[in-house]
Amino acid sequence: MKKKRYVLLLLMLPVAGIFNASAQTLDDFGKIALKVQVADKKMPDEAKIMLENKMKQIITHFGIGSTDASPRFVIEAKVDVLNKDITATAPQRFSQKLEISFYVGDAIKQRIFSSVPITCTGIGTNETKSFIAALRQINPQNEKFKSFIEEGKNEIITYYKTECAQILKETESLAQRGKYGEAIYHLALIPDVCADCYEQGLKLQSKYFTQKIETEGKALLTQAKAIWAEQPNGEGAAKIARLIPQINPQVSFIQDVHSFTNEISAVVQEQELREW
Image (cartoon, rainbow, N blue to C red; front, side):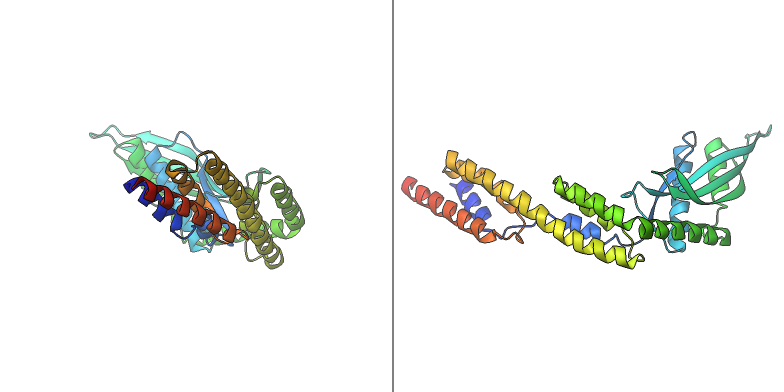
C-alpha cells in the first residue's frame, strides 16, 4: 500500500527539467577561457598542482577564465631543469634552477599564439620541496605575463571572428545527427567579445535546446506508454514514475504528459480501492 501511494505522489509532482544542470553550466561560458596543463610528466605531483594553480592565478589576474571544458585553447607550461645540485651538508639540500616556458595556443591545430619564459631557483630538503620553492617565486602579476596573455587572447578572438561560419555549420551538422548537447556545448564556447558570432550562437543554442528536449521527451513518453500498455498496474506505474520527471516541462506536448499521468493515477487509485 505504501509503495502505491508513493508512486501516486511521484506521478502528481510537477514534471522536472533535465537540462537545469547544463543550463547552469552555460552561464559560466561566454568568456575566453583556457585549459591549464603542464607538459612535464616527470614533475612531482605536488609541484605540478602548484604550477597549475599559479597558471590559473595568472590568467585570472589578466581577465581570462580557467576551464577544463574546452580542449582547444590552452595555457601550457613546459619545465626545463637548467641546473641541479645536491649539497654535501647534513641534511642534504637540493638546489634546482628551472626555466619555465609558458605558452598559449590552439591544441587542436598545434599552433602557438604567444609564449614567455620565466627562470627561478629553489632550494629544499628534497627534490619536490626544491621544485615548490622555485615555483613560489612565480609572481602571477608579473608584467611579463600581461602582453603574453593579451597576445594569446587576441589570437583566440581572431579565430572566432574568421571561423564563425564554419563553427556554426559544424554545430548544425551535429544537431542534424541528433547530437544536440554537443552542438550546444560548442556554441557556448563562443566568447561574448565576438559579438556577432556570439549572438548567432545564442539563437542556435535556444533552437537546439528546444529540439533536444522535444526529441528526448517524446522518446521518454513513448517508452512510458509502452510500459503502461504491458503493465497497467502499480508496478508499471512505479517504472513510469522514474521516467516522467525526466521530461522537460517546456516541451510542446506537456499537456499530453499530464493527461497520461492523470490517467495512470486514476487507474492505480481504482485498483487500490478494489484491493481495499
